[in-house]
Length: 135
Image (cartoon, rainbow, N blue to C red; front, side, top):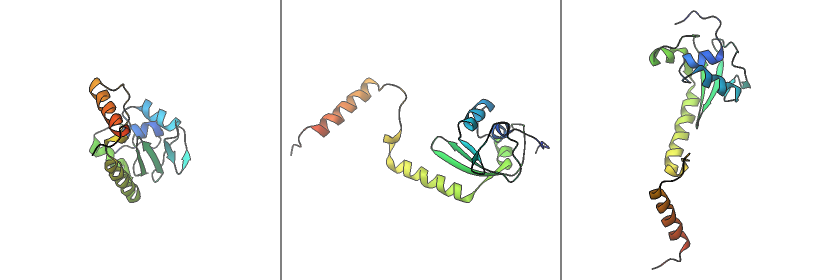
């Protein structure tokens, strides 16, 4: 890929397509969502081949090992060659996804007010739970 011997961690995460922009990668690193070998790190850290990163995005947590360094963002197929996700990480992500799916859509939290239809459904649900059972 690239002959980049020195590349910043935020730039590598962007090039490996974990984040859409370097700014988002930098924010995630500063927020403690990216760890190198179990320790918090800075966006300017220079990752090395073989480093293990824990990356948390939303509900998912990935553990990846850096296979190659690059400071250029390329296609997804080429970006996947920059790292290798550990087998344990893949298994844990699949189990967590299955648990979330089994819980149903109630886990999702909306960032806006409910619509009129949704409010009616909420009221119907609450009234059905609070009223005495009729047989």
